[in-house]
Amino acid sequence: MIGGFPALLGAERVFDFSTNQPGTAPAGFKAFVAGEGQPGDWQVLSVSVPPLLEPITDKAASNARIPVLSQLSRDSTDERYPVLYWDGDRFGDFTFTTRFRMTGGALEQIAGVVFRLVDEKNFCVVRASALGGNLRFYKFVDGQRTAPVGNDLPIKKGQWYELTVKAEGNKFDILLDGQQAIPTLTDNAFPAGKVGFITKSDAVSEFADMRVRYKPLVTFAETLLGQVLERQPRLLNLRIYGTTPARKDLHVLAAKDPSEVGEPATEVETGVLSGNETYYGKADKQILVTAPLRDRNGDAVGVVKFFLKPFAGQTEANALARVLPTVRWMESQLASSEGLAE
Image (cartoon, rainbow, N blue to C red; front, top):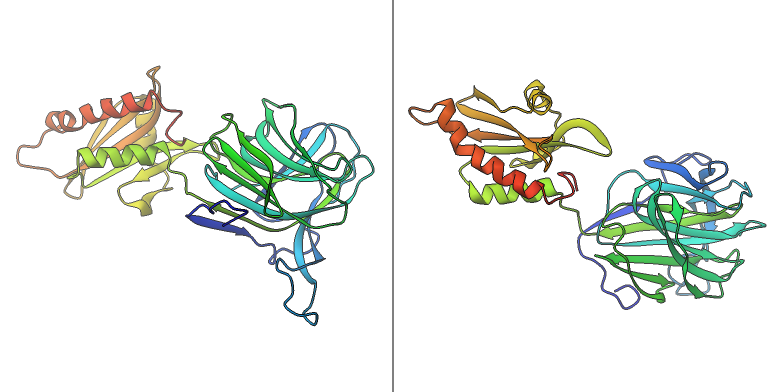
């Protein structure tokens, strides 16, 4: 349990900076600035941090030096929001926890997290302010910051706090040191996205013990694949190809054989996508039908490849007759979705 709320079951990612050289930016993260001003200076530093649990005896060591994430830039531009985000998994339902403290800043002493980050102009924020003595939630939508909501709390500079954001569907619960700090929020802006960290203006802040427990996202391509295999369980194999915001080349988004996910497309699949025409072929005692997947406007946005077991008298015409009704059904489902990779 976390602050009275059941932790989400599923996978967990722990952000461990122990392999980073002190004074360097952490691997796997990307930075940007929302608003105005200079980029943030994000570095991993070795810092003395109190343990998560209280020592059992007075003789136990109270603090230990561990690698923490630090934002060190002191650019005092007012509407300046340095962000560092994990450029890996996207999360829908999750529990994101980190410890933080503000160590400097004349105009601002702010530290917080970003989540449901779609891109540099669209994401959610929860941040604490030592100078303001408050905890606030707000969003950036198309680059514009919404009005903040939250509560006044006795947050102090130099003190470590634990911040938890629990997102489940369109419901957000915000906890500070294990206690709900803002009443449950309802927000429909972004169904999924990446997570990271944020400061403001000249605030110098540190983050430690970051982790995310989450329910792995299932893309529309994976959902579609499962539905097709239920309808046609005798298919030898099935692959759905597409692109993602992070990977622009055509590649396998979903496959009956999960080990094939991520494989790049061949000339056949790229030709089907660019030509918007179906391709028939044979290989290794299999019949291959590769067809474009068209959106509601008739544009090819993906490719589906069927691997069929041949039979006596198999022809191109009857192979196409076997699969094209399924392709049309897939396109009808695609027309009401946000895309294969969503």
